[in-house]
Length: 150
Ligand SMILES: [Zn+2]
Image (cartoon, rainbow, N blue to C red):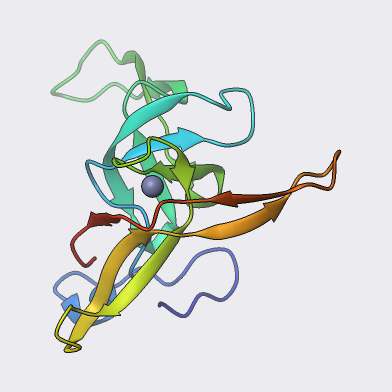
């Protein structure tokens, strides 16, 4: 787990790989995620890239913005570009490839033989939730592995 204070973590300086490595997100590149709040809630997409120090992800075909480009030598016209904007990771949930449901991430810290796995293996978290309206308890999550450590 990374230490996260305030809005953004300090961006590691170029060439500094050690502090960057400490920022471990539950969401990874190529994961399928579902947006859980906001205008596009319920939509699913593939993670194109993660921005660990900002705790943001860019999801394919979701959260489009018009980015206004200044005129440059490469792009003398300037103009605007329709592209995906980063989303805070708190707005998305990883879709479990085994049960197909948006899930929370748990980490299994040891393999079958009991040996420690550095960083842990991500698994679909088995959890009980209470329905706000009915008060009924529900079990969610299948416990299957989502992906290798990361
Ligand atoms: Zn699952």
